[in-house]
Image (cartoon, rainbow, N blue to C red):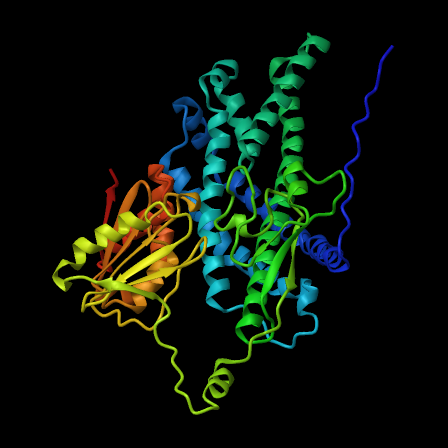
Length: 492
């Protein structure tokens, strides 16, 4: 007697009306806007399959690997795809993001899609997409060029099997190869008198159609995931722009899922979790894009959203605040917001920077110590991912701040780059963690260089060398271009 065990259904958590509305609007957008990018991607992969010659495929099979020229051409193909089509898809999705948030329904403001927060994200996401897609395509074909595959198939057979797999992931390419082998084995048993070449041709025809289905499924995954990336990023940027304009007050974000049995365990554990605007959600697993912990999607095809909730009204503009503060005739002081903690001999500022760097190195939130040209020492305490200070004369200043290990063992990021570009007259900027001390002395030429420029080159180098710290590579590129004097020293 067979016993069927039915797993318990997931209990739906009560969801706010706005939470339901956020999900509905996101789902509606993804459903309406996915067809065009799916057709685009399928056509793109078909073009890549058609342009590679049979002789090039035979050479790859015989050598056991793809040529560097082929990989470079694929990378160029993806770069053209991003520049020509995907950037417009990301921009459109980002522009739609704010309209998906009920908290903004009654706020009259114009969303700026040309703001640095959007443009920089799209530029960075494009570079990441090119690198990741090229690597996935390389891995997929490499899985078909193993010794085991080459021993089991003829050169002609494997060359013809590879072509329809161009554009698939490694997992899908292996599935197509298994599908092909199963058909060949079945036909040999059921039709022992059929010629081997006829069996192989029928298997190739069938596996080609199977690969087409895999391509369409992958294209849908990319279309919906990338659109969700940009849509959620646009919503976040829209809330921040409304706050900057004084139209929205202090806001938190709440993770929202459909709550049904189709939600994965990871996302189900995040349902209803509320965090500060700049805080991370506890997303586990492989990181698929930079800044992923702050917003959905948590994984490919993730349909989760974030609901933004205003918990405090907007603060009055600074000019009005100054007017009120001075209404009684007292002076208004908005100078230094960092804590003065003492002074050092200005000639010993470099040594003092090392000392204070070691003091803040292990802290779990970002902290900064600033030593001005006169030796005055200030301390600023920040949050999980950033630290701010103002009112200090930074000309000739030594500055050290920590990068908490939980944020990644990384060098200076884009915010640090912008800071150095705007304050190129500082003496030195340092970043510390439990593994390294990073130091940078900005030079005048940094004003002529963009972060996107150096980050794109860093992505290419990371792809070639396997170096994980792309921010370190970006700083290395910046140093080579004459923008900084840069160094990374292991901490012992």
